[in-house]
Length: 442
Ligand SMILES: [Zn+2]
Image 1 (cartoon, rainbow, N blue to C red):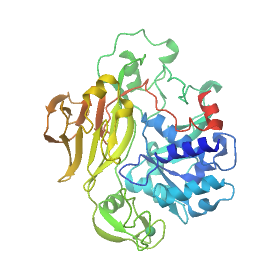
Image 2 (cartoon, rainbow, N blue to C red; image 1 turned 90 degrees about the horizontal axis):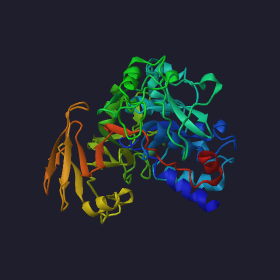
Image 3 (cartoon, rainbow, N blue to C red; image 1 turned 45 degrees about the vertical axis):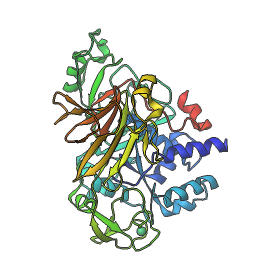
Image 4 (cartoon, rainbow, N blue to C red; image 1 turned 135 degrees about the horizontal axis):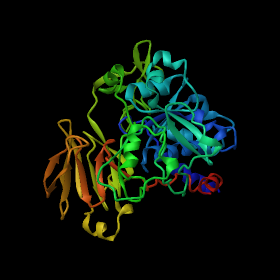
């Protein structure tokens, strides 16, 4: 069992980051680790962070969703954790995969404010709304974590939604199948449109027609009731604009006086987090001291590997960090898509198919394959697509452009994912954890 727990911790670890380019939501680590209602187990359990990762994956329909956890320093030595959990936490802190700060207070909300990332909460935050009015005014920026069917779900809006009619609604857990009814019709942040004509279907059952918001009524009226392989444009909230202070802070690189600082030290290998504001001065969240402005932050882009309309993995391309993508790149830091390829795709895609780099503030792709690469050009999410095939040459990505290595194998910038097959389902990071997994896949 210890072996499986180690493995599941390693799997969770791959989904944690404090790089603001890569992260997709921020959370108070201790608050979820102590959220006993999630599984009814120990008073504090690090595996609950995996439940949050799973819930975020299902909310975003993104099997590579990345979480930014913030932990109070005292959690690292919390006696109620196992020695294994304390060891893992220490490693995550040293590697900059979680942010450690003496006092958490409103730091997660501050990160959400500065970056625009959604904030995962387990309780209301009335005091913090005074500093961050969006907590009250833009509730869709809060994702409320609640226990559901042995796992956890995230509900936008900050309010816990009680199950209707005393019945639990179907949610995706473990290996369950997605419900036929559109997810969460009461979710105000969800809006769906058909991206292409849906196959004719039977009208929705009468009990699923009434009381829907207009958007959803037109959605169902247009025959998308059965998802099957229906493509659905997703407009669910993924990220707000950074606040003014946040935008200024994220435009610069910062340096902490502590040489070993995992957040703002010189040896940090991933993109930086955002400083904490203390008495009007940018400060290191770990060490509390003022951080020094060492110049403009080089532009960086998050890119998702999307296979069969499900995002599988996210990575960052930065000015000083070009990335090669293919089925077997030489450098282990590059991105291999081999895991997700069927035979024909594997035969087509080169070991190093494309190189991605940042040039003059733009993302540039260079085809390095034998078969070429297709660029899907879109100036906006809604415009009709146009394609261009590049062969041994470069293309500067713009707007909503995406890169196709082979049919169904795409590289998509940031959160510009257009289509999601709702039948797709991210795998759980907890499937190796026996005690949790039994509940999750039941
Ligand atoms: Zn520091």
